[in-house]
Image (cartoon, rainbow, N blue to C red; front, side, top):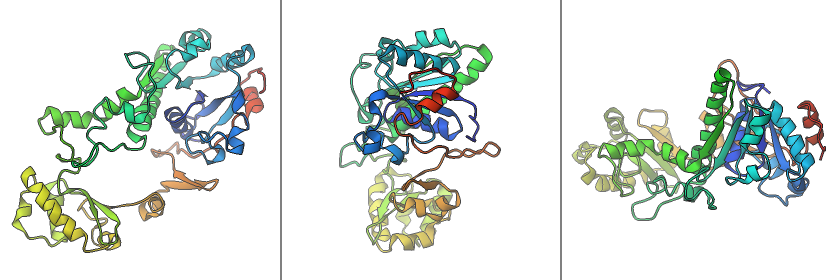
Length: 376
């Protein structure tokens, strides 16, 4: 494996959503990830009966090998603990207390490997009144204010599909926490627990909104502010062909260029930052943008400082010339998927192994890690 994390050894206790995405990020950067799957999962992702893993079609599971262990058996626990001894970090996403009941909690693992960074990702965190409750992304971003600010004024909040909570506020925060703890362990020689709560992370991702609120620039109404589609110069518009474009001309010089490009001379548009004028000016812009197709607006505005982009669907986005030039997407096993990010000048990341089937590499991976295990 190439990438800046080459040589890092990670155990990933199989889960769904944020845990696998965190492991995918580390794998993309070159880490050696062993996914520990349940022994009774073997074969299910090959025949399609385990849709959460999806076999080769999975994107979140790419870049690692899979070992199948029965963590409720002494032999499985022994093999797992042998792996812990040589691992740098561990990722698990069970409810608080589950790993402890299996005898695989932080205390037990640190007794075998004091340098281990023990990464834990949950919705509500390891403690707090809700820590044992079931939930999903939509619930976690609800109690932090993140969901409240997303949506149209005339409707209710609109849930972004697992991006702000599970992946952004959860998995990416866990990856950041793991790397931070690993850097600290190089100095101290001691590992620690990283408690990545999706609620904490989604609250942190809302920092800019809370900053505006603290400055008196953000209230509790949706679509009434600079960055939530409340203005005429920062929103999406439908085109003649039913496709959409986005405008983000915040700065005065970019706003002026947008007006020039659209040949708008109406003096009412001079009141850019007057909230009272936004609804009427938005209607004017919508009338203008409905006069041309998305492609025609791209020909006029794309690549200029008018802060413009077409709103592309999931089929169109990988075909955009900018994304093609940067190899932002690639295809493997018939699945178009995002490429590793960010980019590095010297230790370039690259996609490694395809997504494994459960237990596909049990014997070879255990041997590579120097473990005498059950082999199934």
